[in-house]
Length: 258
Image (cartoon, rainbow, N blue to C red):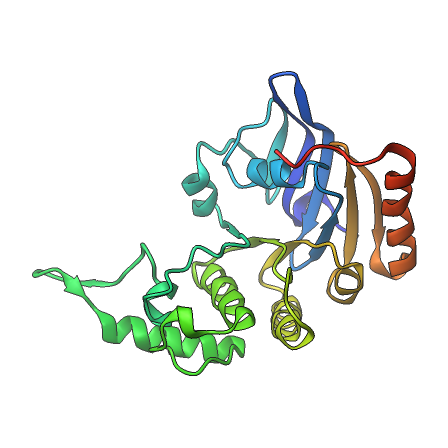
């Protein structure tokens, strides 16, 4: 049970409109410190819009955001990152031609002075220590990212978010299109971070078995509203499947997420 003082991030009564289209309607959501929250819902439910509001990409039209109990107004994605909010999207934003250690410090490179040049040795040593500490296994920090497997690439992207001192990480379908072996790499990493308790996570996923395995609570977003919230111990894969299936039967599909 969390209180306002223990919320890593909280959104209260958020609404977002794009012209005549209402993407979010009175959405309230909270994430406890060290908690993993599963966010599920069909395409068009508003998940992408909610993530963009939480990360400063779009300002809400109504409602408020709170970090550690303090109301905040994000001016930009960079501002949200300064407050410890990071997102790992499906496209990962990694550069295939660069080695792992440079991707880990992308746009935050160590530079030697007074003659400016990259301190590659320091970045390499730090990346090596950080990945080892997190239990991320890759061939080498010198390996170009393009040569890594899908699971390894996703693990590097998550590690980079943690490496940047993130307090809240939003994971946008990190297990999509992965086989069991690749998914296991990311599930193990999420469980490791969860055990440490120094980062909170929101996991967007369509695989309800994975949600139940790694999350503490689950929220269902339907047509711009949170319609369901339970701890994973109080629900099941079958119940979550039936809830989403009922939406198909009762209302049909809606347009894609905004």
